[in-house]
Image (cartoon, rainbow, N blue to C red):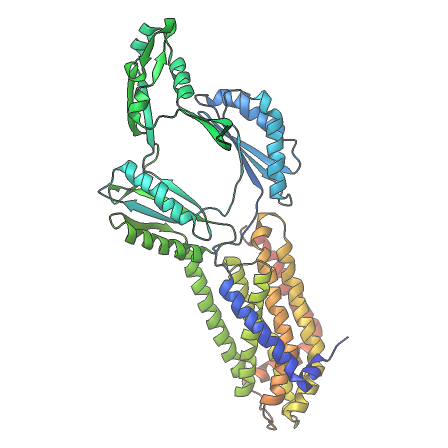
Length: 540
């Protein structure tokens, strides 16, 4: 049933104008708040189980740790793949769940499974680390810091204690990871000959150092009617005091720790390094939080880096890697392409309609369709990324289709001698059902793309819905705004339009196809068969 809402919009234009003024305001505000990212946010349920055992060989970890962990995790509901990686002292098991499984539920199930087999694992392992893997949590910017007045360990401490704390307080930053540099370490090097002569092992020395270098809670006590906490403070405040730790030997003998070896304040063995233009630096990579905008986070981080640079002028920072430049470049290129496509569409409309006022009305349909679509994207949690921007670019030419169909039919009625008001009422009612059918067909084609399965479906979830949002608003524009504008903005045109060369050729082709029906059908079947055959020749 064709509800003639166009006639209602022509007779009562205020509600339609108010509706689209509100939609335009919501769309503009939503566009400014939409995050700009490289790819859509996807939530792939990946859980990593990391179990460490100092000094254990991969063969031992495989039989004593990884195999038992895999057997326990295989019974968890929704598991798709289990992969284990073994290094010296480290066993990492990656569990991939089916896409429909809730990530938080999967994380809890994995923790429960590992807890059940914890008594069966070696007692010397560290506590298992179970964490969710964020697919989109990769670094977006990487900076290098260097300061000739600081040692590598001092610069590393500055990055860890100052830079990292400031950047992690920035909105949208999820992690700051240091690359290269050095980590402070207190090394106790025992003399094997002295240990053998005194009859004590390195393990016994280690146990005594651990037992005496610790702070412990001692409960509560009441002093002068007031309750106070009691603590045992035994941790050493300096390397000198640690070296003076008393080590008890057999037979009641005692020695200082530094009499059994050397105690040094140094750095741990470096397994990674960072080098820039031939000089050592300390680099740090910044990752954005889930749901944040790449461009916004990168700009805020750059502002914080500038502030740190002013506070600590001796430290120099340099941006060495950034994925945001590519993301922002794609965003700018898409916006430019969108404007170019809109301008070209308007030019084509003018060439065919040859009416300046009708072209302006068709041009108005573009922003009235696209801008409200940004509001729908914001409500559904979408972002401006490669997929959604591709959808907006593709749909640019489609958005004016409904308006062109309406305007062309209205112009045809005006050339029949009718006033613009009467022509708008009759022409809009005449073609309304066709316009609705066109729009619903486009939505029916594109929307299922958003509900595909697998990883591809996760990435293209925003594609079909973005196209559907824009096309739906273009339908509202064609049924409400376009007829109303033509009724009040168009001028009467009683001139008969002369057929151009293209129209005459098209009319001649249609007449030939009607006269030669069998030949037309055979030609169509031949083209269809050739298309099907070409499909199998395409690479995949």
